[in-house]
Image 1 (cartoon, rainbow, N blue to C red):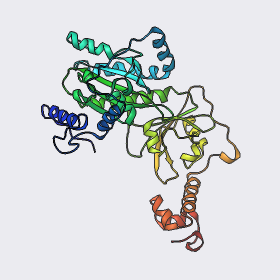
Image 2: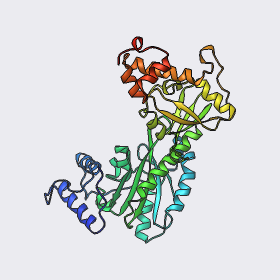
Image 3: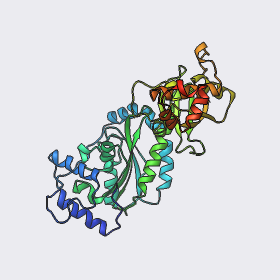
Length: 377
């Protein structure tokens, strides 16, 4: 469970107490009082690497060649992120915070417009807001960038929660970014220099990161795109599941929401086929897209159902209809789903019915059998 937000000045005192206890080794109160577990883990990694808070932090110069290399390696990420960062910059324009995009190694890939401020604040902002500079935990200690990449979760970090004293002028929110195959490809950071604490920026960072991920899926080449949500829930463009499917019916890209809805772990290999996810032939999805069906209710093998909005990609051709994949009636698809549930339950009809959320009588009726031969109650 996350530590509740504590307003200043109480929060500053809490941070100072935690530093004395966990970094300096001075027991001044209850062990670990009001410190985020991920923050403690980051401090411990810094200490294990031989760092001390008083050590100076240097931000290395960046060559033009390295800047070009960063752009070349992260072309797809940049194409998806730049429109999102432009919108993001408008949202934070009056807060003196700015956006930083990094790759999975913590190397800066893109930077939003820098706000005005004192000469000292401007210098601290320029130190980190440079494409190609290394802002990983190994280089600059505990930051939202390093923590988000290490924990694969969003974080909020304020002033003294940074490990090094040199970086204690920053406050930052960070959210990891996941690519079309579910791998961590970088993170999005919102940073301010000597500014008021704005923990609500964590939510903005998360939402913006999801927008970048969705844009990468939309930009991914495919034959069919599916937009998924639960029946009766209008998820909308910001939170819906997205799938890219090739002409063979294999899933080639997905966003975080789709992977969660379909219970697919990040980076799962090999890429799943539609028939492994949906209890209907892939041809039915292509046919629905070709007909222009706005919404198709699709059964999953788990017994759950999702709403899918299928769309053929530009120039894509649906796969040929084979004898094994000719469109089937909905009741045939339901029967196949029930048979699979009974098989998975090793013939136990009561267990299969419970998994599907239907009665045992419905199982018998759909399979067209009497109670005896189907299986066990």
